[in-house]
Image (cartoon, one colour):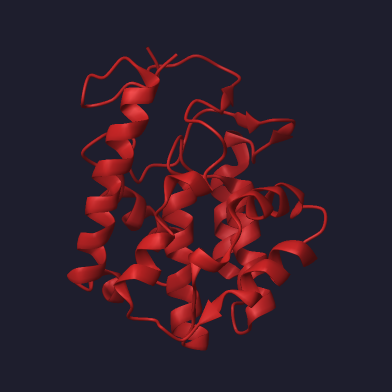
Length: 206
């Protein structure tokens, strides 16, 4: 099953390839045009604007809260029925120090508000918070991808691993294009493109 897309691609691997190419180009545009500086920092509204810009050429649902219930491996993300309320609570979470920021990042990952493209969008969102509050960002080239994915999977129960991994990778190179773009790497998403399980069929799929 391949997500319905504006490119009319029906092969999941071809779609994953085009998605990565397009979103990297759009992410670079966000950076070079300094568009991130004008977004709300630490809110779903800001995250939604990031997601919409990255994916608007690919999916009709870009920037929109998902209507499906989704899971990955054995983990079920926030129910679509209560997603809006969950996002409102995340908006109100504090973000004054590193621990608070990562806890907020973890909660947004649990919410997983979009049908696709949560990882890339939320990593950019995380860096905007770190930049504003701590004048730091994550140098993703210093974060082992497998360790990161495992730590994120365990983070709802125990967040010490992900906090340790990301704290070791903090840098003050907040305006470095290479550091920024490393976070857009699709390989930081889980292995493969079609990893989500939906619990209902709808018009988003074909």
